[in-house]
Image (cartoon, rainbow, N blue to C red; front, side, top):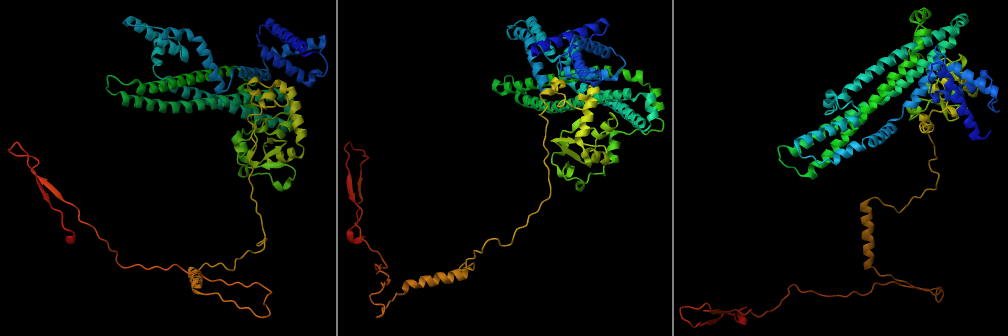
Length: 569
């Protein structure tokens, strides 16, 4: 079937499923329906062949199964899928959200901004109207509320609302996170008890309890993501608050009590204050969106109280010790993997790996061996006992025995987990199996599939040994370090200037070889007297008196020659 025709058929199937659900009073989004269609097709128990074209009966069967699953109101698996779809459609990264927010605000507030900038108010009433427009623009741009509410108008003059919102939302998320974790710990303890007692598993139907565990674990992961963003917002707000105080102090120092201040001095500070104010608005809107997202996630947890009331949970927890994830990790902290037991596998440890805490662990850090051997039980892995590197991927385990068993045949357990994920589609996002199911990658994570891959930097102690003298010695025998010895040689060489070279020739060597002699050439000799003498003539000194005149009209000058004689000099 051509791609365009296949796409048209899928759209028709999605539209038909949506109409069927709406006829039963349940409105579902197309994204949720599309995800459910893929989940039903992936489940091998439904009998759909991915290699052949769907016939009419297959389409009818697909529609029926999807509608049945979408209308099941007491199914934790469906709640988890709805939660994942909702989070994927409403959550974006901090940078993408702020960029999109600025773009939307500029398009919506362009007309209001134009009214303010084009205003030429002079009268008092006109100025008051302009002020109200400016306040309304600030409120609309920040999204703090309605400009007609006086409380909101007063709040728009200071960023105090953001300092109150951060602790409130953080406290709420912490409380919800604690509740979700406690619930996950209790479900995990009951499932461990069920795996050890086969008779109990027949009465309890543990598959529903596992789906409830997946639901609350997914909720916990989403809360941690939101809490991390809230913490980032708090850090940004704290930094901007310090900058705001510094800018205001600088502005006060420049203005003081002056009646006029040069624009070049205060305008850059006004620009900085405007940018800080806009940043406060961005953080306020982001916190509001994250708070709303947290509140909407809570509605996907309704089936827990219906399926597993508190009384039933307490009965199942009899003679069972509920352990937290931290306690499970501490139990096997010292049971590290021995490298001598493995020759082909590569293991990473905190003391030998530089970026150990930044490695992208598979299955969100849960133990793959426990998940595969207990039909889906989620137990946290302990990186301290060793991280297995297999085909450029990293795995952690609950204990050393699980690590040894998994390392013997990793591909076998990976295939088991993949088959389990086909039956429970919510595991694809919960355990981050998107690379194995590329068609179900969430849009928000599609661009970050390879972005977070970090290679480990391993460290190890090594030593080398070399021969003492691998090259022939290059000792200079004429080298002298003693300066007195060098001086003695210098004086000896200087004395050669006073020597004459002699040569003789015998009868045996006559006319057989050239003889040469070396002499020093004659020097130019000169003398110098002890005193240098010279003569000079006296300097003339002639003066004329009476040039300034006197009482008479005629000026008379007298010439006086004071030049000394030659013999007097």
